[in-house]
Image (cartoon, rainbow, N blue to C red; front, side, top):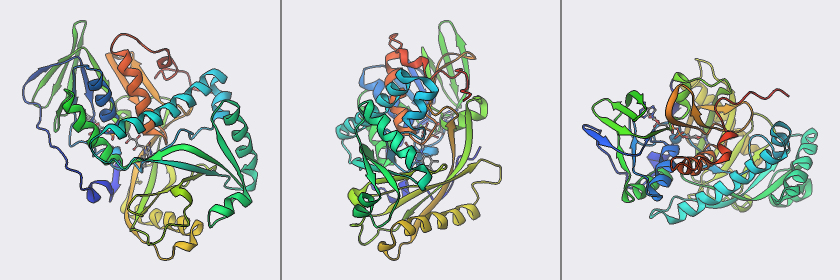
Length: 406
Ligand SMILES: Cc1cc2nc3c(=O)[nH]c(=O)nc-3n(C[C@H](O)[C@H](O)[C@H](O)COP(=O)(O)OP(=O)(O)OC[C@H]3O[C@@H](n4cnc5c(N)ncnc54)[C@H](O)[C@@H]3O)c2cc1C
């Protein structure tokens, strides 16, 4: 499955020194093998190496060239599914605890980014979540009441308050001050660099081709090497759905653009992350070098998606959406436009845990708009699990949980 197409921005724009790792061409032994060198594999390897777990990371190509290269870098604790909806689906305790995990994960990412020797362009940001139409005002009001009732402090902004801060008008919004943005490429390479200094062994160009499971452990065969380990963590992203489809997962195509630097972004209040109640939603953010990133226009995935024609067409639509909200910005032009496959879970929470057909393995499927936040949650839970202290929260994210029927 082709996961991305078009002109993804991060590696073109970056000045960060990228380490290269040789392929595995011999036999290695370790406790945990992480398969997949995207942001999920990077966060997980980092956390494992930090706690002293002997870990090897295997990547079939180069680090960060999968879906992680398409990531637009928004880090939010509010989810594609509002808290009120999650409480309906899973009950109060689980819904609220899941939101608390997401909020904690954003804080964890902040701490980790702050400890890396590179500037990952991690910035604390507020989010404006606006009602796309009048009829969605009650959703905003309801979510405001729910979030505040459970201790997630957000502000309710009416039309006047929105107009006072932004050059556009919307009927209502939530303003949330707990979010962040990051340069996912710099974060990924910063994590891997530090993790290797903590003992992580990394092999690029080492596709895992076969795994033998036995009571003694796993034997992982790559194209030209072998690893013996106790546990595998599969961090193979959306591509996992090709060989282990999960009934709870649906696949869409999604689109994004980055603009050339904009002369004056002063009308963009607090550089806030912006998104909306419409589904699929439009979202946008700014970057430290004064560009705008916008994304959305998702559609159910078909074989004809991810074409250059669609990327150009949807890219212009995204630009028009930005211009409609910020007519004050004057002439803005696209520097990068790209598309990607995007997986979501049907009940709105990620899939993390074991699968009956793959012994001694854990899967991380942080599917949804908050993929990076979910990867952080998964890394912390699995880091405990591999030491034998299996956290109870792993039950919630079980890969074989039953689909929710409203
Ligand atoms: C356009 C777009 C915008 C997005 N914006 C955001 C955002 O703003 N915020 C956010 O949190 N999330 C966002 N996401 C989601 C985010 O990109 C994903 O959650 C994240 O990239 C998933 O990372 P991953 O490491 O799990 O997968 P990947 O980055 O795909 O990494 C998986 C890796 O596994 C490797 N692999 C696969 N099979 C094997 C094998 N057999 N052997 C060895 N290696 C293997 C692949 O080569 C790949 O490098 C966005 C996604 C898209 C498409």
